Length: 56
Image 1 (cartoon, rainbow, N blue to C red):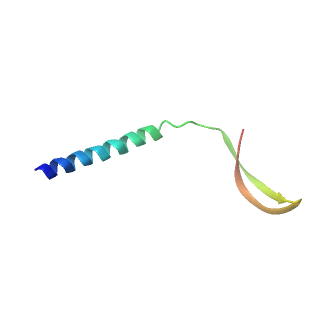
Image 2: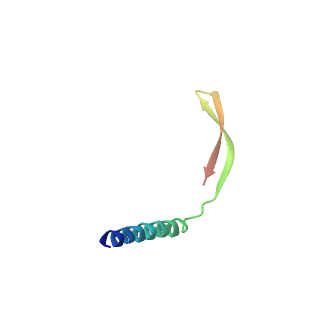
Image 3: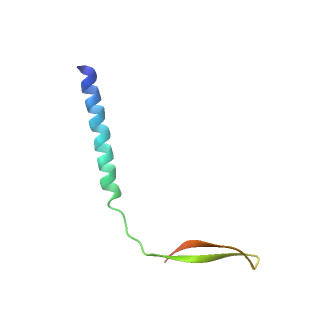
């Protein structure tokens, strides 16, 4: 009986933590970004083109 109670308490604790974590993550901050192709230059020579995000 004692082991069942411990298992129940551990399960409820883990469930509460996961539920609280999900609720906390849902309250994020929205930011505005622009996805754009960016060229990377080194010493004036184009090395590669990649996707990037521009913020502010």
